[in-house]
View 1 (cartoon, helix red, strand yellow):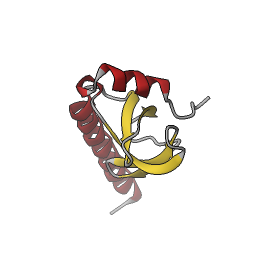
View 2 (cartoon, helix red, strand yellow; view 1 turned 45 degrees about the vertical axis):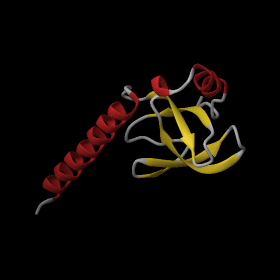
View 3 (cartoon, helix red, strand yellow; view 1 turned 180 degrees about the vertical axis):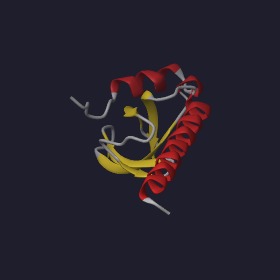
Length: 103
């Protein structure tokens, strides 16, 4: 197989994975990306920038990400949650706690 064909295949696979992550994020949160409410393994809620196929502040582990929790001040695996399923108090708490912003 020549190099252009390998590049095209790799590009198609990368695009397919990005589309799958975007679709999964949409189904789980109702949003395609951006500032998403996430929950760490200890149950803390906070807001983080979640862009499908891009990870600047976290280590990607498939559907999950490993990043610093600003609520408990620890490193943890986080997963997106649907903010509409949270209580008003939980939503306010998640908005108050945002991980560090990317300049």
